[in-house]
Figure (cartoon, helix red, strand yellow):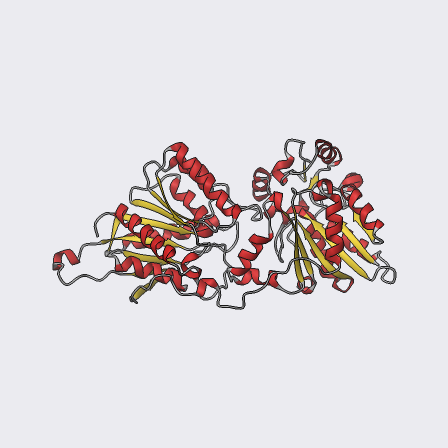
Length: 510
């Protein structure tokens, strides 16, 4: 017999699993919905010291109470915040757990706090600033949408969610999760609720991108399911969820296939550009243009405009080679220099979703260093953002300096994705674009983009149109995210060339 240990998310208790538990028991399974300290009918047991460790101990006691002879297989399910105590407990009892199910939640690591993934921005800011009381009030019926999509919930289900909700002890969200590493060896299943923005296609894109932090998602013992509903499938789709949990316990589900090839970010640049020497100064590399023989000596000494290329992320701090050594960014730097401007690539420290402020400071420092170089015209600079660095565009749109002649973005992500958790609200380009004034923006949009990323681009373009900011859109219909490395087609070559011409036109004569 399989035993299911079910741990719900913020504000809820064992009651939320009622219908799912009934269906699991009808299949012959043993079911243990968990009510954590201070939640559900245990709300009066919370004290100011109730924290994540309290909840981990709650789950450990339930696991220890499952008879190993009657139920040798234990599948532990964490929904939303519940994945934190689930992982903490499974890490301490790995010999009892046969599978960990992540139900519409993230994959936190050692040292992470649940507060980093709180989707309600106001609560997240309060947690960061230490301004919250020892318990966070439960949402009203109108506020649940801030904590996850309510897609699929009937009015009755939403009223039930509100009626039984309990305040969440703040310490459960602020105490870091501590893991020994034992839990990482356990089989895992992700159940993705597409109404909340997560889907298997997005996971496949992350794995196919080749970045090391996502490769564990392609392990043979890791599987995925999708549910076409919002963030509370135990209320909106209990029968389907129960069926998925039973299938997960049997090891079923979609597997992500590792490519086994060279990671896309290490493949050659789409354009064949001549090699050029580069100068490395701190975090930046400079690619300098040649001076044609026919140019006078006086003209050859004139400073040139510069284009600063800003790589995406977040990326782990230990990724090697670093982005400025990736063929695409080497290619962009060389290409800019071949056209008479200074190409600049920069390694910045966008290593996590809470690092956007630090990354923006790194870019500011890099630009100041570039502008101070006597070979660069300090009043003619363009900034060019890629992928997840698209959010950094907001920093420059909100109040563009006079020297910024153009901002460019290629397959950008222009709003935090639903799975990202904490991102400083300053970094929302659609909100910042009304401060851009007459700053020209060149945006390269790929036709085969992930749907959630594409939606952020459309929202930005709508906001830009409303406030009158000029955006030149370059479409690449048959290309993917990262097309300069993976789509070596004529469309890609033309798009890179067109975007570069557009940016250089705003910088003026070289």
